[in-house]
Length: 114
Length: 112
Image 1 (cartoon, each protein chain N blue to C red):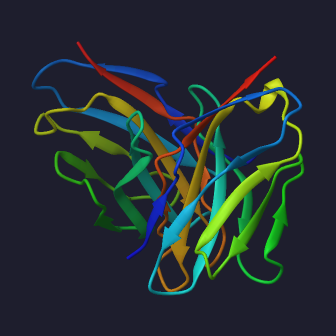
Image 2 (image 1 turned 120 degrees about the horizontal axis):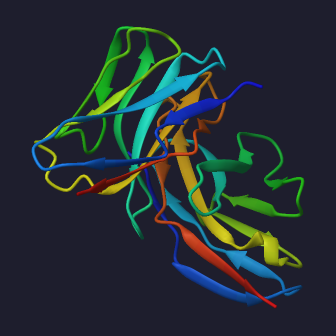
């Protein structure tokens, strides 16, 4: 079984400042890791994923996340946020021997202020 | 365009009533999922199906039922046995293997 902890339920930040959204997981097997973003009253959109290979993964809109196996973390970062990044962000994990079953963290609400 | 369609977007249920939420996908995905989202609790898995005519309970299946008669459709029924049905319900599908899940835009269910 897996579990995911997102340590911050809300992260307020000023526009153009850097941000880090933290995600830690626990699992007894190797995992795949995902970050999803949810805008109000919408479904989840895949932001980025780690399946294998390079531990640093990037999205097309400037976010990146680094898989750290020793610290069981997959923190999401962006060097300079925009107002449009205001949303809820979910970290999710799946064991590589599972039937594509995802376990989600509780979510972090990123609030970008002008 | 391929995607997942959930309907209706908003749904109201009376006490003692069963309601059915629709989920249709044209991505040709084998696997489909239903999640419930409550504020501050992330997503919790209700039911999932990895192939037509087969489905399994997730973590919070009590008070819900599903069917998977067609590959593209996975409707969820919220029965009167579900005493706290007010939530945002999300349907997802996946191709399988290491591919990520794709989500619909959700149905918000409220009690009258």
